[in-house]
Length: 143
Image 1 (cartoon, rainbow, N blue to C red):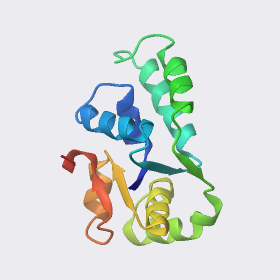
Image 2: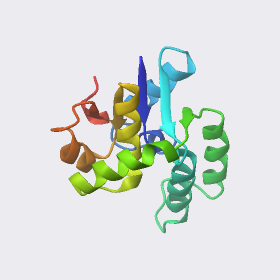
Image 3: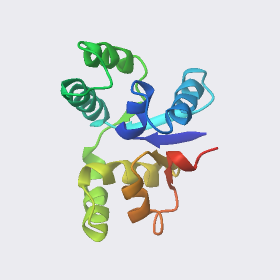
Image 4: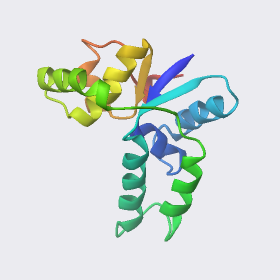
């Protein structure tokens, strides 16, 4: 099995939130070679930014220096990274039609190209796109 994952899912590998146990199952399956994970090349940058923004909050769920530590760990667990440039025309088309960000639609375009599910913790994105793109799956919906 292969899946496209986004930063919203991988963030849960490091920060305890709703559905973190489900995200950890995906991570562990990937580490054990049970599944393949894919992402466009903006994935590590998005994850680094999300971790740093969390660390800098007044009330953070991670400690000082954890963003750097978690990024180091994440870089050892990277999904198979795909160049975003060839995905951009389709991502922009999806974004325009469904009033979503091109960033998010890069993941959708990759999953469409690879004919696999895109697992995201972004419920707004799922609600907006799943009716047209049934392969866009909410992390929360996983067993």
